[in-house]
Image (cartoon, rainbow, N blue to C red; front, side, top):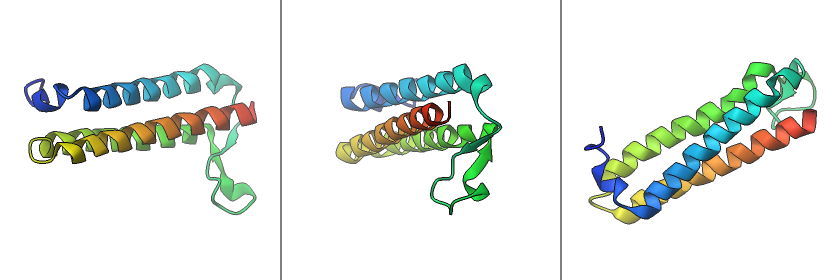
Length: 117
C-alpha cells in the first residue's frame, strides 16, 4: 500500500494537509465520544431545515458530518494519487479541499456540542 502512495508521500504540502486532516477528524471523534453521555436525546444537526422537529436528529446523527468528511478525505487522497504525476497543482488543491472540509467539520462539531451542552 505504501508503494501505491509513494508519489504523494514525497510532496510535503499534500502529506501535511492530509495528516492535519486526519488529526482534525480524530479530534472531532474524540470530542464527540468524550461528550456523548452529556448530549440530549435530540440534537439540532440539520440547521438548513425549517424550524421545529425537522432540524433535530438522534444522538447518533452527530457522526454524519464526520463520516462525510472521512468520505471526502478518502476520495480526495485517491484522486490526488492518480493525478499527481500529471498535474501536481490539482493534487494539492484536492489536499487543500480535504483539509478545509476537515477544519469546517471540526468547527461544526465543536460549535454544535457546545451549543447544546
